[in-house]
Image 1 (cartoon, rainbow, N blue to C red):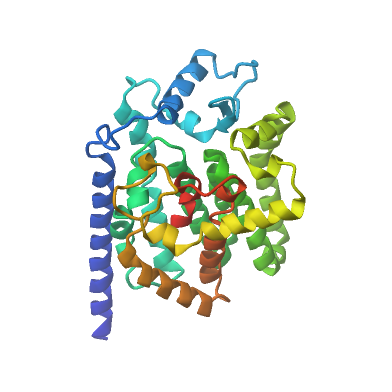
Image 2: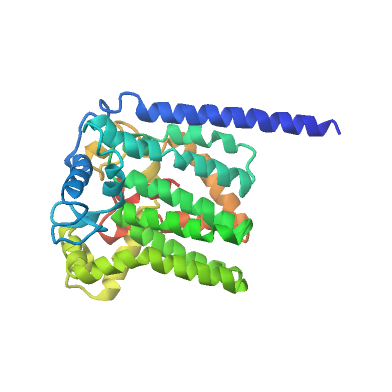
Length: 352
């Protein structure tokens, strides 16, 4: 009986430390947000200005379509959820702090969701460390303090993982929420679209017996998925050249005149590059200066041993859904970036 009070006390201590970590995370996102990063880039400002234009057009796009899904940025349709979220604060005075502050606030769901699935599904005794660790990741620290839509994609993808595990290991009623947050990640950032799609296909294959055990859950999932995907397919029908234009602007090899097998080989090579520890844990010359913390890797080098230990544990326990999902999410993380080339903004979802 003496062990029970000790366990309760440990749980209470862990919860206190977790909330302290969340407070630290929030402070390190919001303090001097308009001062660092030192630039305020056009790809940030366009989020607010597109929301302002959308309201002035009475929620229609330039072609007159009501409630558009995607918005143009530099002759390509690659903005979506980020603009609609800025609509929520469009009634406030426009400022750098507010434009960056909204996605920074939303990014709280990243350490929150990681902590919960580490505690409830990985069964980690040190789940409360997640917000402290995430606060100190150089790539995430930098980009979660910007209005680049990449941070939104990462945040909603982490929620997707949490609610998928809730669906898979707790209650099937969580499936619509898992699909909803997966769709939010999909609409948040273009490179994450492939990541969400590949993750969904991988989970469909890995857990197919579980999916088909309940016809009711399967029907609810299919209907939810159809409703969430409908705006995307409607957009593709109205703008059939948009995808090709986007790939051309990215100078993607997928629109070059080379054999398909060569394209597939390049795709696999770039995906492997996005999983290279040398890219993540040490400084590199591949990424633009504005997307790096000077003198630091995208992840701290001293976390590499812990990453390898965690990878080994998940490989040993790959039959368990939570560990299997961690491996699948790691493997598909770079696929969106691999369509063109590896860059930290495109591959940031891998930090999950």
